[in-house]
Image: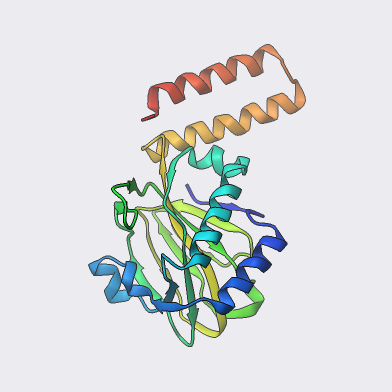
Length: 226
């Protein structure tokens, strides 16, 4: 699933993040990359133990929990603590595929990376280049969203970030383990959820809405890991 999710964060939340970024310590982004990704990665990241990372990570996870579109699409079981990166001066991230399993630093918790997410903190007018390019069988998607907006896409897809040739690109990136491992099954549930919402808007409480809701939950019961 390839899905833009608008307004994950409010303007005030984006402004708070930008304020924290100004005073934060940025380190070599290869510190959190796997072996293959480290060969292609040129950017900087916030330290995972930086107080700004923790504050902003909690803010993002809290916002995601109340975002109906994200919950419907991802059916999240676990969200990896958000990381934060910065690209400027020609920095880029070459083509790679995200690791299948990520361990939360300093804990025994492991997250299966069913979905990847990038949440933007810089507006597209603030920098040139820096597009996230996601390659799918149907073609490539080039993404550059407004600040506070997020893109959700399959973690098993090849993707890269083009060089930033002007300005600074600030973003958060993280992964989601879904209750439903299979992407095709998640897509069916998402489409069914949207259809139920349409029916409820037109005929709230109708027998058709009740029946479709039952089908949704029976499929979720069959397919979910938890």
